[in-house]
Image 1 (cartoon, rainbow, N blue to C red):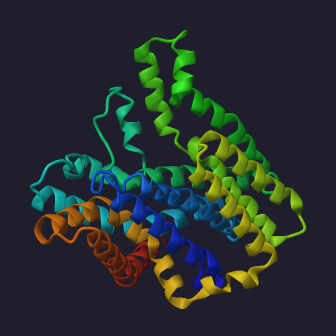
Image 2: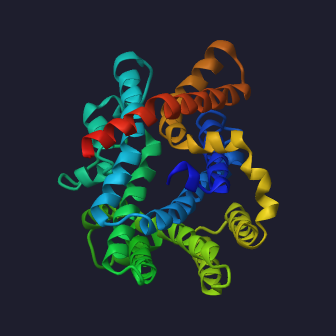
Amino acid sequence: MKPSNRIKVLDSLRLFAILLVFLHHYYSAGIYPELGKLFHFGAIGVPLFFIISGFVISLTLERTPNYLTYLKNRFIRLSPAMLICSTIIFVFFHFFYSGDGYLFSKDINNYFIANTFIDPHVFDLKSGTIKYYYLDNAFWSLWVEVCFYIVLGAFFYLKRDKYIIFYSIFCLIGFPIYLLFSSHIGYSLLINYFSEEQLKYYKLIARCCALFSECFWFLIGIFLCKLHQNNRDYKFLLGIVICLFICLIRDFSLVALIFNILIFIFTILFVYQPKYLKFLEQSFLIKIGTASYCMYLIHYHLGVVFIKYLNQNYHLGYISPIITICLVIFFGLFCYNYLEINLIKFYKKIFK
């Protein structure tokens, strides 16, 4: 989306999503055992990103003339930041990091795989074992995003007036099959018909199909976009409620319940009472939210290592994650404004 066409509230919402992810990863049980459970709620930041993607991609499709141009634009949007951040991560862990762990972050094969946006488990299917893995564990969601872009785009350019129906059917069929082959309940049922080795391999296949695990979050974003365009088309409001209910039943918890209620409240305000969300249109919130993609890519492994370094050498305790968050935000703003945008321009020249 061009800057003039951006919906400011969604950019600010990205900021809140990335802050939730920061809290989840930086105050995790691995660093602060006493706070790990308390800040586990931050994991809801990723579904929030998926909802925003569902909304934005729906608009993007309507403004893009054909499938090839759409895919090219998506690649140009995603690849520059990934190239920058994955290179920094790989170089740091491969050449400078001497501590324990992060073997997958040192592997050049995982570096190249990261820049294809293909899930490493796809490359593991041949051997049936985990040979390749994420360069950074936060990268798992990029494959989900890319699969969503490909699938929704295919449905849209196949039949523009039916693509939401097609995608809804896709979710309703794929979601239960995914759960069957990836959950403990499914395992207890399938073990009567398949061997343990077979189920282990099927579970690996299921990990490659992670879009089915998250597909309803994207659908909420699609429905929200359509409701925003026509707030009297109440079938989309009903669709949001149904999707929230499905997501809640799948992973029921108090945090999930609160999150789903907040998403519904946001939907009502965003569509019918936008004046109450004007506080989200502050320029500094929008600037940070716009650069959140860079922040998401760089924050996890490097951030955790930096927090441990601060705690071991300066004993800053709970302040270390706050310092790290500020540094990641500054990096994200610098990366977006001075590196990513220029690299995007270079990509456009190549593809032109």
